[in-house]
Length: 389
Image: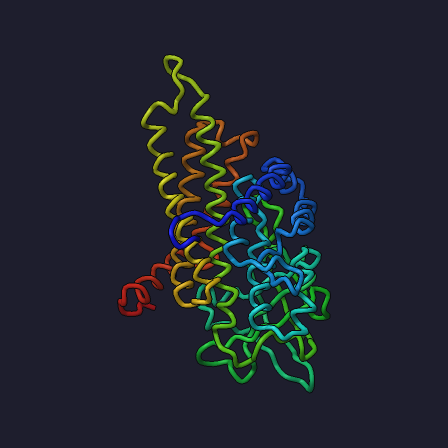
């Protein structure tokens, strides 16, 4: 964002236009067909990679565009607004790419960042555990030293895209830190490693990206699989979690834009009473206008969060990333609901491609991090209220 106006720089505007053109070649029909038929959006992902869109946040010396989270989130928002959201952008270049960029050794950056940037390596991210939920301090996946190797044992759940990934960045705790506050240690685990298995979680909404439970049974890794310092603390983890929340907000805003555009288009052309389009009636117009206001609020929040992250202000970026993620999840739900209602019965048909989005949008209120935990964070850190949990 510029210092004097709430506008994006020309380079990012041009980036948005390029992404919009490419994503529109595929669109919602392509994504939904792949989801229904059990396919993947590999073709779209690879084309995004060839055009440099997946690595805009990766430093130039490691094959990326040299931009920041503001640029990557703009890419995801535009793809989502074109009906072709790429969930794994939240994971591979945003979370994993950011952590490796900020915490990895020079060798690790050379090894993983160029292929993350061009999309030829897809790295998943594993933090969530069934018995921990939103309380990451309860993580029990453990890393134990054995000579010059690490041995990982534990389970993860609701991990996205593992069937498409070549590796997973796993959040564990070292054996001597099994109690007390979490001191996360992060390990790159190849998906073909011995002792690493996955189980599909059937989900109610259709999406090309699948969810998995992971099992790590004495998975042996070389010493350099550890990214960052085993005693580096939570900042290493939030080097990826703040981008995750910014990107989640951008995806939700893009989804809301898509739903709102479909609703407005329908409201302008659908006539029922006296040859007047239904959009002339306040019962239709006002909910859509309300969504537009909420959408612009949410977009400003994620743009500010991304600008703060790119400027290196991690704590304030975390504050706004949480608020942006909350606002994005809310407007995505409100926009898809209003769009379906505007379409009436047509909104629930496969033809109009909105019904499946109702459930997909709801995910933004749950993950990454529930809206209730965001309210806890804002109450405690932004307002100075006593901690409630």
